[in-house]
Image (spheres, helix red, strand yellow):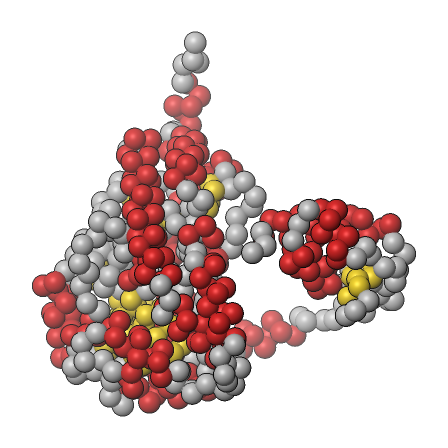
Length: 490
């Protein structure tokens, strides 16, 4: 297994040395590079591939790598100003204009600059990912007979069966579609259930990626507040009556960002309210496999207690594995299943069969339960390290709920705090965090921060990140007069 940093370092070293060779000149052999830089052949191959992708090197099978010849001439720049008119006219007649704003999503996808602690990440740190198990599963999957052929459009039967067993209740494999990750499944669900211009009820606060999906589809997100026990049924019923909405999107387990779990007494009430409104509940069960060691028994998915087809269930393997392991389930019963299937087929045909085969190999291997136990213990340790550091170092940041699952904490800022200024100060101090504003579809009640403890290297980095955040808070939270008149330390 090659190291990502080694690939980048070797590519940079070779890039600096290219001037030694004339255009078309041959670079040292792979064997020579392995011996000189003391790296693996895979690292050399990856580094040369990176330079080839940049147009700096040309590789010829059996001959080696050569410095690329410079391109002759530069094409004149085109005039794309016409697009301003075309794009502004697009959807001008829509009841709810479609807006594609990826800012709330990219904040958890973009890698921070070197040396910056990643409290804004949405995925497991590479040290927590089951890289060896995934590599072994992919290798075994690639050797399966027919592994590179066309899969069933709904997904491999064995994988659909595995997802159905995980949901529980009376859900069957025939009611499951395999999708390309949770984001794709949510997109399919919203497109299937709500026409452009329609309202869709969302938890407040909620996952910014879902708000982006809704707005890109021309839907109107309507917030329903969440408290420590999940979405509030009284306000949910009011929202259905006031808007005529036919869809609620919710995360009943370890809600993003609050970490709330829908209380047992509310589960049936939420389903009943939706059923009486003639509405669907899209259940985003995104972190069921990121339960902490001390969580106790988890409640079943809402779909397991829904015989009437109210719930459209979304579950994914991605959060517990790798951001590139995009395999998820979309489960529903009744006529809506065919609509979901049709939209998914039109959009993407099917999830690549090698990835589905690899998913089957992974979840069927002894390494899978070991991995889940390992991250369960590690996430608990990281959560405790972060909560302890915050309470000792930043007591002015309120932490109303400590979840026993998921990968982040949701903090309330002191009244009047400028989230944007604090995020900028934190980045200057060397820590990336996520402001709370993108999690609200309407005006937020206060300033918030979401801090992830899964994307960092370990508990030491968590402690150091909170220390840096203390410096940023001192810069933003203390009034300027206090800073000017503070007595010098002796």
